[in-house]
Amino acid sequence: MNHYSVIKATLEAKLKELMQRAADIEARLSSPGSADWEENATESEDDEVLSSVGSMTKNEIQEIKLALNRIENGHYGKCTSCGEPIAKARLEDLPYATRCVRCA
Ligand SMILES: [Zn+2]
Image (tube, rainbow, N blue to C red; front, top):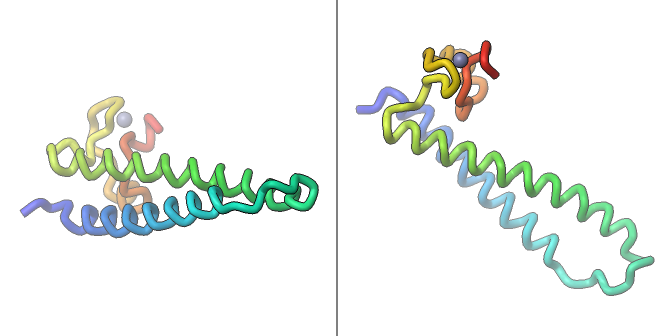
């Protein structure tokens, strides 16, 4: 039994939520109705916000996938920079942290 199973479940739930959010953002960004530029000025500002939220969401999805891989291969919880264990409090705060507090 992997002792990171709780964290793994948390990450999997978070991943699901983020994938759903990314899909919603994609759907809104690709929605039709942007032909009239002037009328859609506000809308395209919203789109900019949406696409930056979208890329943040995608980054987070990648981070979580990496963390899940690291749990699978037993590297989870070790700093990728100095190899020291990452403090439990930090992992609870940021479950997909790949570096310890000192190297972050
Ligand atoms: Zn470190």
